Every structure is written in C-alpha cells, then in structure tokens.
Length: 584
Image 1 (cartoon, rainbow, N blue to C red):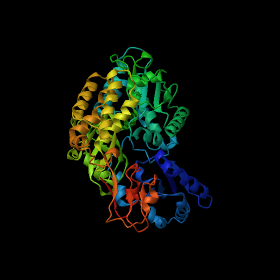
Image 2: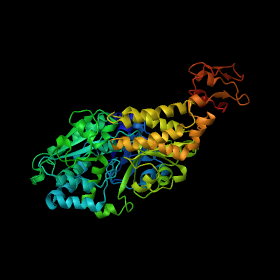
Image 3: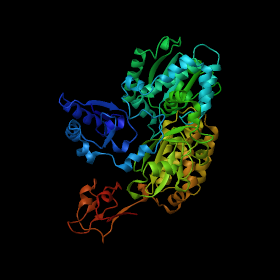
Image 4: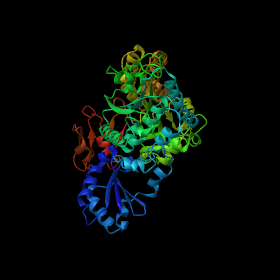
C-alpha cells in the first residue's frame, strides 16, 4: 500500500497543509486505500506545503507547494500507481540539494516520522539508547561518553554538556532536577519548535539519559506558550511514553524512576538565561540571579539542577547509540558535531539547516540556501539574534565554530541566521535589535535597563536624520559600559549588534549623520519618492495603489507625487512596471 505523508509542522499548516490533509482524507475511500499520515517540518519551509509519497518499496516522491485543489490529482495518481501526472508538483533537483547537502543528527527524524506515533519513533531506533543506558551503563559512564563526544550546549553559550551534568551529579542532595530550555526567544530562530513538533520523543529520550546521569527524578520542559502545536505534541508524547513504561516508576524494570512535565512560559526573552528561567519556573518574575551559586549547586527550589536546550538533548540518544567518538569526528577541534541553523531573511531557500561544524557561512547561505533572492547583492548575516552580531560579505568564508564566529564580534547563539541584502539599512538593523532588547530587558540592573534605552534613542535620531557629531563614539562608549556592567549574559551581549554594525558598516552611520542620507534607501525620514518623467507612461497604477492619494496625473500623462502627503510606504515603487518611481 502506498503511503501519503503531509508535512504538518507550524510552517506547513500556516501555508495550508491542514487543508491539503483534509482534502486528501475526504478522498481516501476504500477504493483508493492509501495510508495517509502526517510528519513534522523537514526544514524546507520555503516549499511548504509538502506531500511525500512512498511506494510499496519505500521509494520517495516529494511534492512541493501543494494546494487542496491538487488533492484529487494526487489521489488518482496514487490509485493508478502512476505518479507521472504529478510532475509539475515534484521538487526540482536544485531544491532537493537543500537536504542532500546537510548532515542530520538533531533533525534526523524531523519530516520523516509521525510525531504523534511512538511506534514510528521506536521503529527508527527510538528508546534503544535509554534501554542501553539503563541496562549496561553507570551514570559516570554516560557522562564520560558525552565528554568524549565533545557535545557543547546548543542554546548559545556553548558550555561543555558533560561538565554541567557532572557538576549536578557531584552536588550533594537527593532531590535534583533536569530542565529543558525550550523558550527560544531569538527573532528568526525556530529550531527547538521544529524538533518538538517533529520529533518529541527524541527530546524525552535525551532528557531521560541526562536525568539518569545526574540523578534527577523529575524533568521539566520550559516552553514558550506561543508554541501551542509543540506543547500539544509533547504532551501526547509524554502520555505515550508513560503508557509504554519509558516514564514514571521503575522505568523498564531498572529501578530508575523519573517523571516529566511541561511549563508554558509567557515569552520573556530574558528567560532564555537559565537563572531567570528558574525564577519563572518557581512562579516569580523572570529575572537573573547572581552567580555563584550556579544552578548545578542551587537551582530550581535551590536544589541541584541542570539546564540544556532542546537541540542539545536531541543529540544525546544518537551519541549514546553510536558512540561519542563518531560525534566528535564531525566538526572542528574546538566545536564538535553538527549545528542546526534557522536560515531566514533575504535568502532564496529559507528553513532549517543542520551541518557539521567547520563549514563556512558561504556554504550555508549560498550552497545550501541558494544565495540571495531576486539576484540582489549579499550584504550581511546576523548571527546569534539580539545577542549576536552582523557579519559582512568580506567574512563570508568564516568557519562556523564558536571561536571563529566569536572573533568576528558575533556569536553562534542558538542558531538564528538572518540574511540581509543591499536594500537593508544597517543602522535600521541595529535599531531593530536594540528596540527588541530594550523592551525585553527585565530591568534588574541599571546598565541594561537604562543603557539599552539610551542607545536606542541615539540610533533612532540617527535613523531619523537628526544624528549629531560624536553619536558613533557615544554609542561605542555606551556599548562597552553595558557589556562591563550588566548582570547577566543577555545584557552583556545586547550591544553586539551595534558594535558589529559600527565595526563593519561605519560608513553607513556616517552617511546618516553627516550627509543625512540612507545609502540603502530604507530610513523613511531620509528618502523621498519621485516619478521620472521620461519613464512614466501614465498607466495610473501607482496612483491607484497609493493609500493616501499622494499621486496625481491623467491617464497617459506623466504623474507626480506630492511630498507633503506622501507617507513613503513604497507602494508606488512596488507597483510600477516601468521603473518610473525612483527613491532618492
């Protein structure tokens, strides 16, 4: 029997996958008799909705950008066991390279198995690692295997996982906790969501191994409430794991007991910092604690606790099954294994990319991501979200590892990779991230609470054409003061987007301040729209699309824009087919 699988991650559903699934389900009668299933996001977000068809031999035919109107054609083709009628929906060889050029460990099951079926997970070696651990290994041996692998925390800091586990295990006390940080507050980052939606059991199994290693009897997943589908599928997975004996008392008859629960967070960015997350878990406002003591000594309810993020735990079962040396064989000397990136922005093929450490930014953005949309010129890539920095074209061949990225002024972070083209204003980009950071500051320390606000004020006046001599130097002074004085890592890294944009794009700041011009043509206060009389044919399309009626002119006559009325929305330029609307 043929199997038809619909990609039903959040991105697929947003693109219409649920409608596709419903249409296929309605047509799946006894006469057609194919197996209809769902799966999570396979990372090819730019091609959603995606439908995979497996024949009886297991061979895959992938259909992309499918609509509900295509359902009948798909059903007929499957019924006739002749998929040639679907050629116009099949993925191109070029787009198929997006996955073929990746190495997947954390995402190994995403887009492959049904996330709502524990049997699917078990059939792909699921829960074999925890069976091995409980029957053959001591906690110390588990920690040693993680040490051999070189697995570092994938949440941003890149701290050795084995060290944190060992510190928690060595701490005094019978009551210990293992916590998963699935808050994922970085703009443009969605790796953790995709793993939970597409492979929730890998998180459970990885956490079980970690809990056994440190001696915890309770596990908590702190996930942002804006991820309802992830929460729903994880709740389902927990229930299935309990029924099968993977969670609860005396797991698999080993004498090891551990339970798991979910805490939905309110979406505060600062709760990505582990001590702020712990405060939130305890019911208090999410604000960082002074360290030491570290969570391994006094964490949740002041008991020894360990915190890692989703991607970190998603690697653990694979490492224990395949051996730490195999994981360590990938990557660079200081950064082992693979890393998942959320590739977004002005790139042709956006989605989730997992590659071995040691690849370059150019490999990800141009080889896998297909380069810049619309043939535009690459300008920069923002790495590490609001805590990261902008890396320019001259550094595209930077190797992806913690040390090399840190040398550019950016950071690996959780894996957000926002691509910018020639039309992106770097002053505006710095302002965007500072606006986010200033709003998300918990307010506990003065440097972060007031410093980010002052920086935002300076950036705003530069973008508005009111910049003053000395503003760049003032921004740099504020940056270093905040880095030196902020309490937590989030405050200390908040200046990174500003420092890197000044470092690599200082000329754009100077143009805004001195010339009162925005080279990218993006800052509305510094641009104006005019219609080129030699190119205008009087088609009236610009006037018809102007929301404030700032454009006048008769049919087949040259049009003009009233600068007093124009709100600089850009609709006229977007709709002109003759390139007559110019930005100055």
